[in-house]
Image 1: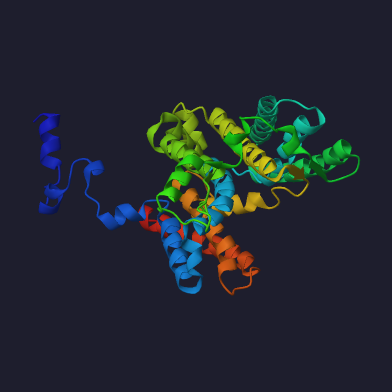
Image 2: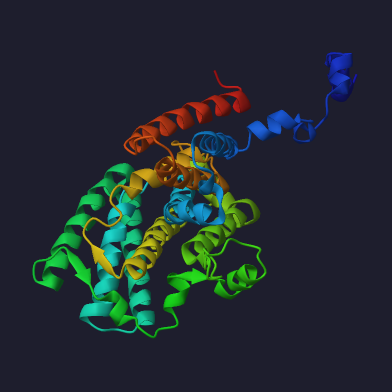
Length: 382
């Protein structure tokens, strides 16, 4: 008898249940609920719906007018730009606790270039992004070369950048911790409209003329346009989502955060991927700095204070795991909107705004527990 015939004779007989099983587990049918549970942004979307219902019940109706929606989308957008970048970095298995201080530091560089050195706005923007990219790369290289946790390295830079901002502001102003004069420095620059003010003003004027949006008694629209940070926020969320789900680099991000050693063995350039993510996070902070400095016309030493923690919380609410390898840019998008809605929405109620801090801690705890529960259900862990 041949060896092949022996293997056939020794093979256990197939049961009816075995015969019905697909030969490839990738084509096993999964229920709609299971597929939804696997989506990282599920918790953030559910939370957004609940928060919206809550403010519809206890808040004033004006909160959900066009003007009210713009009011809470502005802070949500500024935080969301940071949160989307933070979520990509967390999916890649790293943290950056320096982004809040990076806002202050790059805001100092930007304002100093405009006011003290009187450089053109375009040159000041390039210098600001270049400085952020260098600092982000430095963060990444220290983490990768030393093997230290990114939590520790970026925590150190949180204090370093904040201290450099204080020293730099006092040097630039002769002792003050605030640098003014930005609006005068950019007067007449058309480039400022990309980073400051409202967009689509002509469209909103047309909508007001046709009674399609609320107007004042003189006929002017109550909302003159869309704040540009909202457009940056939406565009960044779209690009980040496309990057994660449609590109090879997105696959590399998930692989680097899931198991760096296995990813390296599979040919993934882990160090390059993580360095790029650190640079992207720093540049996101620089973008927020440019937007806020142009809007306020000044910069100060406390700009971006504690934004690093809010960005990470928004990313966690959006489904990003603290262990890396899992998350969603759209989830961070929803998480940031929740923050903005609660921050501004409390003013539409009789609730003390100090409860906002309680909300932050509570949402972080609930999100971590929910994400952990979902991960275990999906993966079958106990």
